[in-house]
Length: 441
Image 1 (tube, helix red, strand yellow):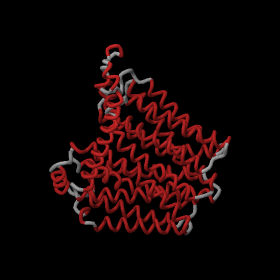
Image 2 (cartoon, one colour):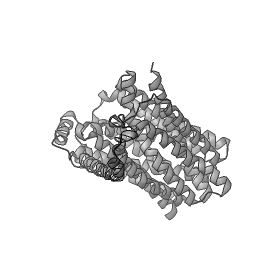
Image 3 (cartoon, helix red, strand yellow):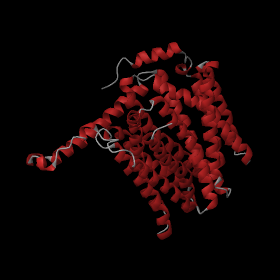
Image 4 (cartoon, helix red, strand yellow):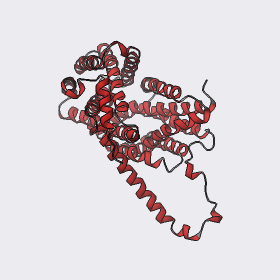
């Protein structure tokens, strides 16, 4: 049994993820319904991507200086406010693209530091409660996987039961509840070591008061320098030290862009035009469920095939499913192909994630993971924007054809790329040795 603090941490994390998962389905549908402009939905994703990327890079450096629990609380409250303002504005002024952009930026700035802070809190919660880290991480990841399946399904039910914009009240409530649960964590959780010893105001020297602004300016410069260092070290670790890691990262980005285009714009547009927008959440859940089953199947049976065989089978399976989806068949076949796409993507996703951990030296891992996560915050919106631009230029059927061809090209390139041919232990060890020759510091 998990202890009280650990349980509250998991509940808070689940509530925050659930709110984001519901919003990820509902927001594109609301935007399409209010503006009628497919390109607006893609543009909004791209507008929010910049601040998310910056916050993702600076988040790690910032969390070495501020209370992590407080950061989680403030982040969830900002997210709740940004989402709650959408139905309020809709009822009073009427939602326009400008409102979506302004509130989307507010939510984007709030979300990323909170996600990073919650990750940074995890080891501390385990240490305080005496919970085994590996077991706790497994529980957290399992809950996250379930939320990615349940969230879109809940969104589908909400959209079917109430006006689309009113479903966002549930998202805001989830974020607000996450903040309240985080507040119940014991005092001292999330505090930075050097911040626990605070000098009383009465003992502060006048000179310190006069120079406080200088120290604050130095803190900002230090934060920016830390962000630049993290980005430089992360890019070096991901794209310079290992051919295999560079190839697997680029492949992962390509597949992420196509998947984001499907989930973020193709499916919402298709089902909105069909008059069944609630089905968007069902299909996103089907993809998530397929990916969860595929990942679990790979974990259980990875010893039966070589890594190369798993990668080839996984990529070719996704290509076949993507071709079927690109024809926009009837609802039943489209649902089956969406689930199959997730199922076959599971092993490839697990393998590519493994390379990201295995081929990076421990001294560079934090910078590499931080940079990788920040880049994903750019790559996925780029895919959504590209999909919306294609729909605007041609139509949804032509866009699906283009995405299907791009997926096949990405898979073909991966299968013939020399760096992805030999994935055995000997190559992996060589890659690790190469990465351990040194990271920029």
